[in-house]
Length: 151
Length: 188
Image (cartoon, rainbow over all chains, first blue to last red; front, side):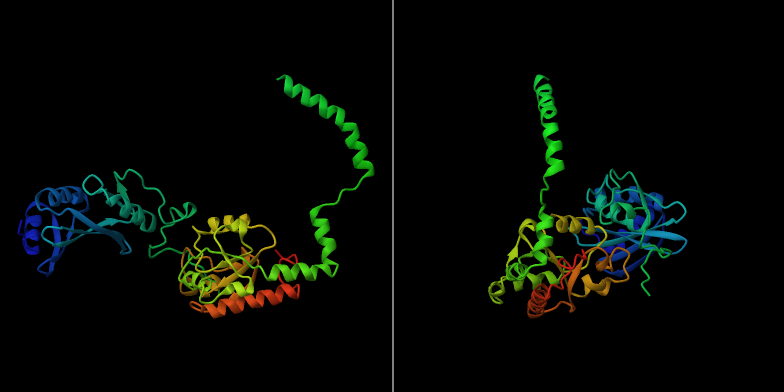
């Protein structure tokens, strides 16, 4: 399939709610999507557009909202698509991508313990890099107060 | 079942003898012998032996670990000081904390330290193990190593060169000779 990044964005816009999007270069694009559509979009990308590789899931804290950032790319056409989904901090729940990309489980565990984005459907949201007693503290959030103060 | 009863009756027979032994005989203990030896000049001989066989635990934790491994390699020939890298905590005398200690790694490090037989010493190598280094304000770094281990030697540097580590060992040898290390002072 010979899609450019812009074409991919247009197809996404036709089928799903895309609130904001930008073309950085012919094969690097990003889009801000509604959080409840993420699983449907991932299925569409994986089945129809040959996006077969989830590079990473990052997270960001915007005060009132948390954001999950997905980097999805393909071996066949090389487009790097960044999907951003904002979830409210009071109820940060988003669908897990494990049914589509198996490696999402690891990234989701990391985003869960460091930022507290809860991924619905992940089979095992267990501690990965944090010690078990620090679970629930979410140290990468902006309002985290647990940093040492030796002065 | 019968064996258990037999054993029970045997201890019942032994018990009066044990009472007599407890009343009239004083057994010495290993720590009593050690305490006695510390007051004699023989301790200097023991210290001479200990300071010339400081085997360290090859347990690299960060970029200082590279320098630590290369110190044990042939180029620096630490064997001339009796310093040999060992891979098992059971055979080691010195633990070199060579990197940042995270809260997740702390239980494993404590386990290694507990597995080492006495007498044992700790060397803090590099800024990370002394004060956290560049990670000192992190949520997961332990910045007060002193609280968890009886540290004898601090080697600053980021990372220190192998020569500095060897000098640290030499300082530790001087401390052992002068009986000023924390194992002998009972400060552990």
